Length: 515
Image 1: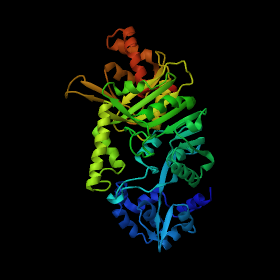
Image 2: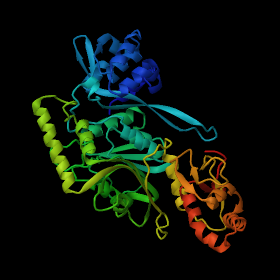
Image 3: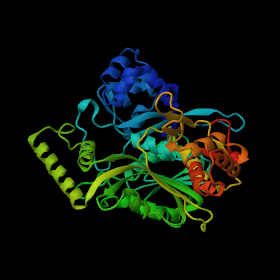
Image 4: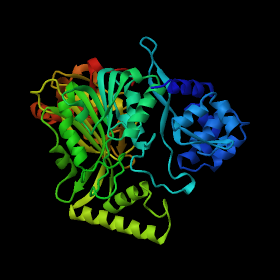
């Protein structure tokens, strides 16, 4: 690859073309408007910026309007002609316009050993231009390369960031996940079937100075890594559930019917994990009229993997079809509002909805699949398939790691446990009542789970400070509440194991004074 990515990086750094600087230049109103694909507030703000290189780059790449050639050359000294040749820019008489999006991106990671804290790192991502600005037609080509999106940021927040030797970004797109993985993996393999995506991933790896750690390969799903194993696999596959007919948008359509692509990944990924490795998937799945969603997904899981599956959202078939027809620009409000376009939209809608009815699809679930290949293959698998549409702490990755550690921890009467510092107890009942009607234990961080508790569970959680064994606490509570000690242990030890797995309690030797 040429030295253009490195020269472009130098120019972006000189202009302070970073996420924080752009947000400050635009101000909250224009910045929020741009997130809604509206550019007018941003154009007004940048017009007042006296033609600074930062304002020029914002107008050129983010607001997608032509800029004066002289302003472009001042912001990108010596690079305009080369960027035109490489397809990033196009030049007309006296003006320059963007042909690709160059977008600043910020990520945080742990500071150096011995220093602690977090470090903000500034990255840049090149992708296709954002469609649909200011209500323009949103139609995209079949090989469109999506840029930074809610899906890519969700997967980035989900992915565990412990140091690993080898990582795989399956279906890399423009390479966002590969850039993240390269910060904590010795080597990263990034795969895709879209030739334009592969080209942009290589460019982005060089632009962000990680090309030496990112191996970009052409191929479908696991075909480019046959026989290889990884410590971490992160993937946001083309998971849209459709009849797999008509034109295919590679960034979202796998070409397989229904949720087959997700099922294939879940079933196959363990063959490509090193012992102790993780695969983390952002996915859609079918909720069938004939079978509960968790039972259906549970059948995909191998006996040698632990699995935490979290269903974050559920859409009915009509809402789902409308969402993705708008995404592809087929809704008349996002494309061409002609009679022919309206008829085409209705035909697509009818075809898709009829297929979902034939398949007895009641709804579509969206969420996370986290697979952990156990080092001890003989141990019973830890499984949790959880419907949790509530607000969670981001990034959620530390909570996933904590679940993985808790899933393998043996809890018995001799265990010494500590209540997680963020767990709070809420009580409800009539004013003046001696005992509450309801006790709720609620986490303030991580998944922010909540569960009701009876008197024994609430008292046990309150007493877990690491000094006494669980059995001792249960025996004391049995005596206090006039319960039979052996029956109390038998009834409540399984509940204690649930409390550990769900993160309310942690082993005393793993507890920290604060998260």
